[in-house]
Length: 319
Image 1: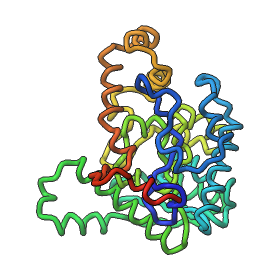
Image 2: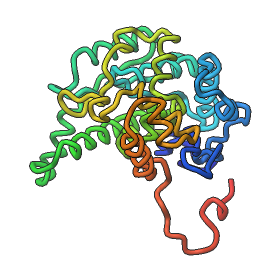
Image 3: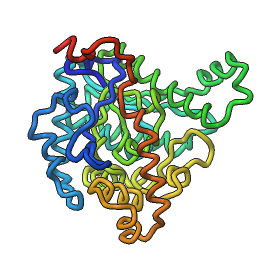
């Protein structure tokens, strides 16, 4: 997360309008809201919005303006979007086109031979064609194998280490094109995934903007339907695609629908006992979700710096 004016094509800033009110005493505060430099009416809309009555039209308009404004501030020529064949990236690509125009959006699909389902590649290609954007397909298999060959330890590496490496290879590919074309990398993380840390640090979390970072996963589905994202993508089981047979909900041990209900109530500062009774899951599950949010806080914050004087970097170098 960079300070105001630090957002440039190729930076690793992760910007999102995420409320910091999941824990007592932090109501209505935002992570790094100063760095987004969003006009007050845009982010206050999310602050006052009823959690159960998301105004999808206003959310769409806010996100489009957010993308457009950040691109203008950064002085870039457009955006790069990693299109996986899943709903989050499909929604981001659709919003990016509405914000910047099809000629200024590059969609890149980064499959792995023998791992990425053919349906994902076909859906990615069809989506890009339908949006009228430039589309590139780059197989990461040889890059991934080159990494493993260079590291003798890779033979004993677990699937999580290898999966995270794939995510970081994809991030590097997106940034190569962003640097070369003077564009921003748009992230595809939603609020549910960001809160619980269901993404790879400096992988799919290494982006310039997180436009849908204040939409829960269930809201992503709703907005995607409203904007006409193809049913073949909307109805697909969400998966990071990092190993065979992987699905998000199997990894998480809970459906997105139930998880979003829990997160909404935590955001309202309801007690674990109250949430468990209201939703019908165990108090232990609620506590586990809350602990996961806390454990993954480091993913949502700038890396800590050893402070050697009374002034921090921001106060020493105002913008």
